[in-house]
Image 1 (spheres, one colour):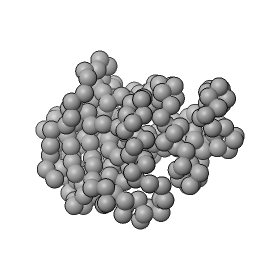
Image 2 (cartoon, one colour; image 1 turned 120 degrees about the horizontal axis):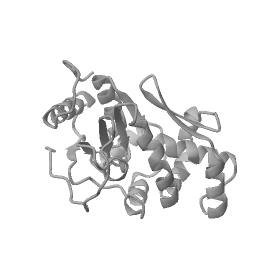
Image 3 (cartoon, helix red, strand yellow; image 1 turned 135 degrees about the vertical axis):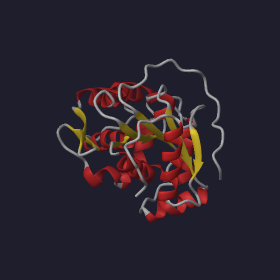
Image 4 (spheres, one colour; image 1 turned 30 degrees about the vertical axis):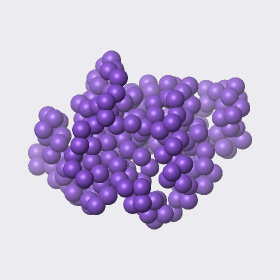
Amino acid sequence: MPWAPARSEPNRIAEAPRCPVVAIDGPSASGKSTVAKSLAQALGIAYCNSGLVYRAITWGLIAKGVTIEREPVFKTTVRQMKIECQIEGNELHVRIDGKEPGQEARSPEVNAAVSHVAASPWLRKRLLPIFRQLAEEHSLVMEGRDIGTAVFPATRYKFYIDADPKVREQRRQKQGETDSIEDRDWEDRSRTAAPLRCAADAAFLDSSRMTVEEVVRRLLDELRKRGFPLPEGPSAP
């Protein structure tokens, strides 16, 4: 599918990030994580998976036996958590109370609960300054579901990557994930706080029949058109 106009959204007023930020949004298994990481390597800047923060918090809540349904306890527990988000080696590292969840962040228990946790308007608002602080000192490629619409709405470098649901389901299975693509999409698009959608000024790309290298080349071309400060001779891996 060729580049297509993005869907419209209400105008937002927000300050542009201090350092250049490439925002990449899209649904689960659309290929955005692999593409975002490869693009960051090609640009020589930091790669940030915003979903890792929600997964780490979910992991911490599960370890404490807390669910979002117990709202007062949920909020108190998150307030008491020491949430550290740092760029190390051009990649985001998240620690909860001094510990990184590692592969446990993708456990079946976290997979089953993370969308519900991430749907909390209170939590999303609480995390905004943490995400935005990362761009105070680092140029970023940040991927997620609301980066171009809510986290960095003023950045000029926005992309929305999607793929055919059947292709996404196959990718999800190869990753060893068992949660339903249909269920994740419904949760992401129907939540009241920063639902998944394509920003009005984002470039749209369907990755269904494209290699990672092809997608990265298209993104580099678009960044060049939008005036992103590219390093000399960047190339897709």
